[in-house]
Picture (cartoon, rainbow, N blue to C red):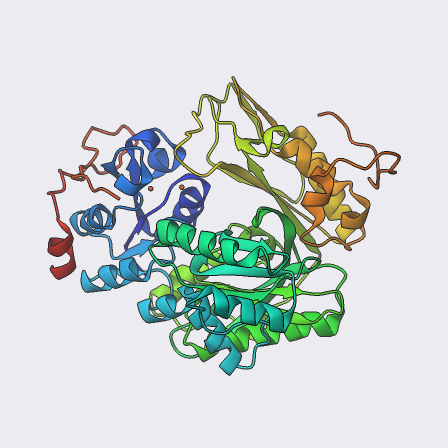
Length: 501
């Protein structure tokens, strides 16, 4: 195992990785922006490194500063968490060139899977079913029209380099397609520096189901069951659960076995997620493979008893996988709600501010992952995720009731601060969701005003209630009463310097 790991992230995931390292006896280095100087991960770290100002392009996306901080503090590995540089193959390669272990798959695997078109081709060769559409990217609008005519509308135009719910446009007719094709390419170029797109049939009424896999560097792999992530707003997940409900056991087995086969076929290592769409007939369609720990990983941990961050670190250190497939037992049901600092009444607009009151829920089988505290200033510079509330129960009804109870206890208040808690509780009481019959269309349905005379379908009444310039990195060097080790300033390092050291 490593002696020291640098955590290249912030917020709740930085805190989650820090705690896992501490349990394994590994010292931690937390890099942070000036905006996060007083955050909980920084307070609890063994060493801290300030790598830039608030803007993430100058701090958490500043690969030069992060690598130099790791070298200066003697860290042996870099854990990227999720978001930021977690799926950046160039960053993983830079880490390797500088003698650092990147906690994740090899750079070449990440590069292949980050390109959605390449990933589709690789998974198709491995026997995974794809949604009807193009396997390769489409260089012209005419090509896109040909594919759409073949598979039928609606279709979705997707950026090959997209991710995180970005770079997608749903098209419902041939008349809309040329403009949508051009718009998606332009947006993809701005967001990802890559304007390639492909087209596939849009499954408007499907379930979003994913499979957690763990693989080591010795050819071994296991799956840890399924998660349902169908409750989404603009392709951003809001509520997740494990295992995926209301699917036949044969479908769950097929998803898990297919996902693991796909991951092993490309030499995947570490913790990853294989994502699928499942239609009304329970036909499974491969979407993508994520090469990082997922936001929703707690629900898998709750039903398996396996600490995924511990396993990430063991695999990255070269250990053979410590679990066999027959060791994995799924028990009960776990559900997680993301608590975002957003206002659902204003189209989920960010609503950051100072937390004057902050009281997370507790109780049996209730887990809260958060970096929030009284007096914490939720920054407008980063993702709006403030907390994750995850619960476990022997059955799904009990888990949903427990989550509703926990959310009802969660007190978050401050000037201008709003959260998604009230909307999440509305989802939990929706009849289709309670029955496990919901799809990715659920949130849009709940947000659409009912037609005149329509009868609401709520199951029960509702109670009230991460940027491209670089900066010279520097190091926090003040004395620390908690006994953490300050270090001296990191010298400036230009793009060529840190690549060639």
